Each structure stands twice: as C-alpha cells, then as structure tokens.
Amino acid sequence: MSNYPNLREFYERVPILIGENDRAALLRKAEEDEALESSTHWLIAMEGSEKQRDVYHWKVLIYPSQTKSVHCYKSPYYTSKHFASIYDAIDYSNELSQKAQEDLLSTLEKEQHALQREA
Image (tube, rainbow, N blue to C red):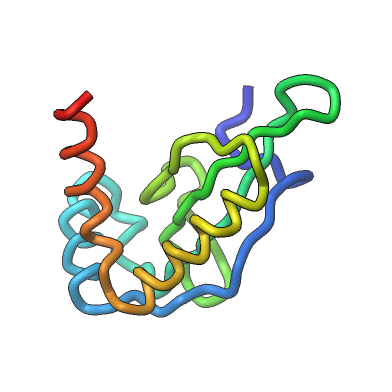
C-alpha cells in the first residue's frame, strides 16, 4: 500500500503563502520533520477513494510545500474526515483556503483536539 496520494483522483488548488502564525505552528512541527522548515506555501487538495464501484469518499488534505513542489506527501499537515459528497469536500476545501489566507490554519489542531475530547 502506498503512502502517496491517489493521483488519479487528486485535485489540488493554487498554493497559498504561509502566514506568520501558521509558520510558527509549522516550525514547532518541524522539530520532528526537518523537511518542513523550507516550506513556504500550503497546498490544499482533495483526494478521492473508490469505496464501491462508482462510489467515492473524499478527504481534504493540507500539505506544506514550496511554490511548485510538495515534499511532504507522506505526512500532510492536516487530513479531514471523509466526505461522501465531492461538493461537501469542495466547500470544506474553500473554508480551509480562507483560513489559510487569514493565517488561521494553526487553529485546526486545537479544534481537532477539542472534538476528540468531546467524542
């Protein structure tokens, strides 16, 4: 089984420059993975997986990247839950793009931990 995304059903958006707050959060993670230190942009993408014939589940991923290259496909910064609808995944990727432009992706980890505690 490959750790790389399913490039057949992989749709990426235009990379977004990493803001100061998000960069600080990324550098904290870089202590575990030195490749993250050179990241300058976020690449937000959707990946589809065929669960049954012609039935796909989608997830939204955020990868640290440089302007034109992603060097951390094995370990995305963030992976969403699965969506049964591509339209829901598109809406969520739009929300994440907005957060990235507002320098708020670092808040995703806090939100994710809070949800895990509630469950």
